[in-house]
Amino acid sequence: MSRIGRKPLPVPKGVEVSLAGQAVTVKGPKGSLTQQVHPEMKVRLDNGAVLVERPSDARQHRALHGLTRALLANMVLGVTQGYFKRLELHGVGYKAEANPKGVKLVVGLSHPVDFPAPPGIKISVENNTQLRVDGIDKALVGQVAAELRKVRPPEPYKGKGIRYVGEHVRRKAGKTGAK
Figure 1 (cartoon, one colour):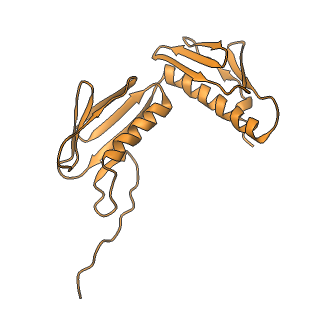
Figure 2: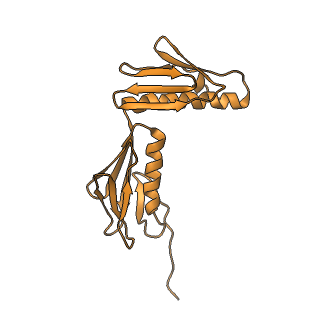
Figure 3: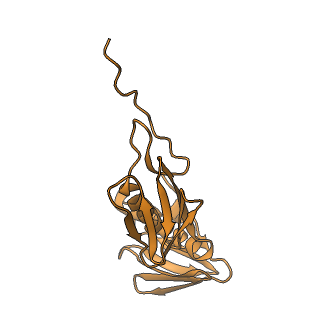
């Protein structure tokens, strides 16, 4: 059983946590995030730490307990340090160009793909074939990175496409010649 929910969440200096009903707002140097907490979970502030309490030991309450605490911890880390994901383009002629509103991808399609960055997300281009997605919301950063990868996912024969840095793409052998 996970014991994450029972751990108190320390609030670092420069971060302000406020509770308004079931909404928890975390403000820090990088911005502000708000999260709705499940009605059965109780969140309270105690001596500079956030505590999450559950009403019973039922299976759903245990799951919600750890989830709520993890979401709040992600919010605190996001407003202090932020999150990022790195992607790389593999393929001849594949490149990315930064736009004021997002990024323009040339990935072997019949047209360049304009990918707008949602509010709160910054997409930067490093050396033409590397992308970096930055933001304070962990889920939104991961979602935008997944949508960027979906523009041209890596294919198994030549490995061309957009992939995460460090992602391993299993390669297939392909056809063999007639004998």
